[in-house]
Amino acid sequence: MDLTTKMLNIAVGGATWVLWLLIVLSVIAVIVMVERGLTFYRSRFPGEQFIQDLLPSLQQADWQQATNLCQSSRSWEPQILLAGLEQVEHGKEAVSEAMEAERIRVSLLMSRGLNFLGTLGANAPFIGLFGTVLGIIHAFKDLALEGGGGPSVMAGIAEALVATAVGLLVAIPAVVMYNYYHSRLHVILERSQRLGRLLLANLSFAEKALAPPVELQKIGGRR
Image (cartoon, rainbow, N blue to C red; front, side, top):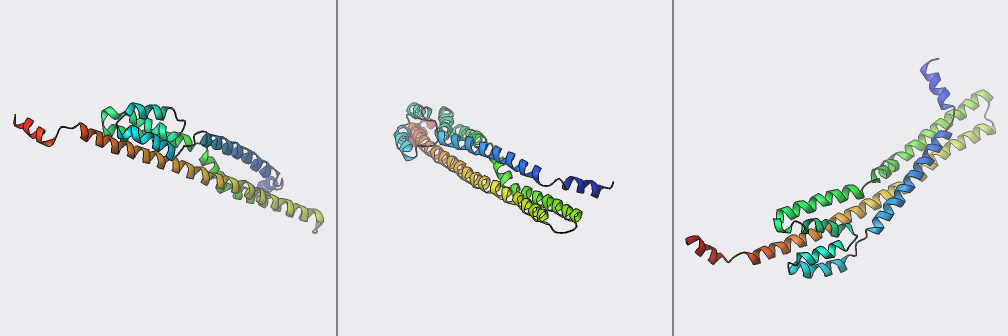
């Protein structure tokens, strides 16, 4: 038995197993969508209200009050800012590096499972098309056995097309939710950038306020 015959024997089994594969993948995709949706919902950011509450603490260099405010929030943006506040005494560079490290951690955590949705959205139509091809092969096999185009052959071709439809049905929600969650993640990271820049700006003002006047520095240098 040559390779072509072996592959034909596998193909004549039809597209049933491909449909089951798509169903399993769709169930996993729904689980990922729900889990990611709950994660984003629980960590939603209060927006401008939080910034209005935070600004007085930053402007007055009250780092402890700002820290308490961040610790009381469940959102990711304040947690990224908190990483910088914990390094205030070490200077701006340490603050910036700490926030960047925390931002990377949050990005990796929040993007978990999104690659699966993106991969499924891109490949589910091809899986469905593969099932359709197998179904049509099965239909032509029946046609060869019957020696004519009977109703069973037409029904087989119709069933084969179901695989493509299911593949599209699985892919569309996966792509939509992948794009939606990625946009939400982008917003989180941009908001954290804004909070970080506010912290660095006010930290610069605080450092300048604590620095001795230039005239005194010159006099001290002469002495």
